[in-house]
Amino acid sequence: MKSQQSTSSIDPFEVLRLYKYPRVADVSDAMDSIGYFGIGLMSPAIRPLWEGIKFWGVALTLRCVPAHMPMPRLETREESVDPYSVWRELVGAVNLMDDIRPGHVIVTDTGGAREAGKWGSANSLAHVLKGAVGIVTDGYVRDTDECILEKLPICARARTSCLLQSRLELVESQVRIGCGGVQVRPNDIVGCDGDGVIVVPLEVAEEVGMRASLILLKDMRGRRRLYERGDLPPDATVDYEAVESYYSQFE
Amino acid sequence: MGLEQSANSIDPFELSRLYKYLRTADVSDAMQGIGYGGIGLVSPDIRPLWPGIKFWGPALTIRCLPPHRPFWPLETTEEIVRSIGIWNQKVGSTSYADILRPGHVMVTDAGGGPEVGYWGSANGLAVVIDGAVGIVTNGYCRDTAECRLTKLPVCARWHGRASSPGRMVKLETQVRISVGGAQVRPGDIVGCDDDGVIVVPLEVAQEVAIHARAVLLHDMRGRRRLYERGGLTPDATVDCEAVEAYYSQFD
Image 1 (cartoon, rainbow over the protein chains, first blue to last red):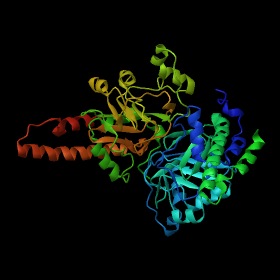
Image 2: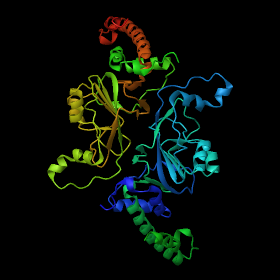
Image 3: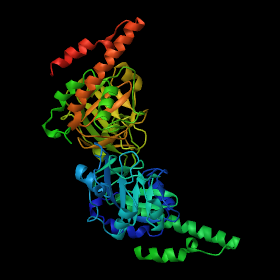
């Protein structure tokens, strides 16, 4: 298949430009069209935290496992305000901050651990300020009111209040992981909108991106005709001229 | 914490001998007792395939992932028969042939993808013949009738049918994995009986075994008195002398 290039020669951030407009549905249809039925379709249980999250980005992966030891009782009030430092000292940590490039989506495999809010309002904001355009986890998110207030682009399976200690350990970054029933490799293309999350293997991402843009345009034209027939005020979702003009640069 | 030894200096196969008579319940009580309550308690939906499976041994870990590409139609019957080998050749695989030692428990993180009966009657029998004493997976087991017939010590979450082509990638062995909400590292002590599966971190496994032995003997003596009061015929579960005699070699 023409679309099966070796991934090392592909710049994922360049391919990402093809994904500016498609909906997750267009990309799913495009993957179906090359025979990738269900590949990359993340479990529908992993949901955007608020209505209106939409992103496409390049996967930066993080692998976690359940804890292998308990957290000791903290003896002082000073320690109690920074328990994560104690836990990090005990079980180690993985720092993504130096790896983040603008356009990255951080995808987290929490290893089926019990309720543990790896992502919260502070660390998510810090990673977004470094350029992350999305955060996906098969586990939990906490401080959710603040995450929504700050418009943090987080997709998670569930919400929680609790932190990691005694519950979760960070193992490594930028390795192949499983998340929501699909494999995610560093540099795969990851996207989200109200329909859910999808992962496009990098070696087919260019072909899928081109097909998805055509599928989107056909759908936009059809919906525009319906808008006109029903006398609905036009909006960005039927502005196919803008999309056509954007994609003309790739022809 | 005083209970923790460096795991490097411990021979897990030697240490497993301390677990010979222990029930998973005794070990759970001992772990609770040292502050490890809940650590290592594998999800109760991962079940032994037939009543009477009981084993203890050091973990050999296998990490699998969902696929990143679909399978493709095969041309001949001969290819269909060899489909797993063809798939492995295409997407890569990993072998434990050189790692497996008598006494090992094969612990498999199936990666959370679609149904794949990764363990079946043939590969299960092969590892048992090579010395494996148990097989644990957070995924599926297939050929289950034959697995029972040949008394394979398999613990799985589900019975399944499908095999790996287009559905699973066998990624690597002997890394930290997650199974049923518990972290498993190579060499951790893994046990099973009718109550379920438990994982003991190697660095506390000796301490846990010593406490668990006392818990078991205390319970055996109590049950023996009940047997006597109720006029029940004694059996191995109340034979404290046999257990004491076995453990005296370690004192």
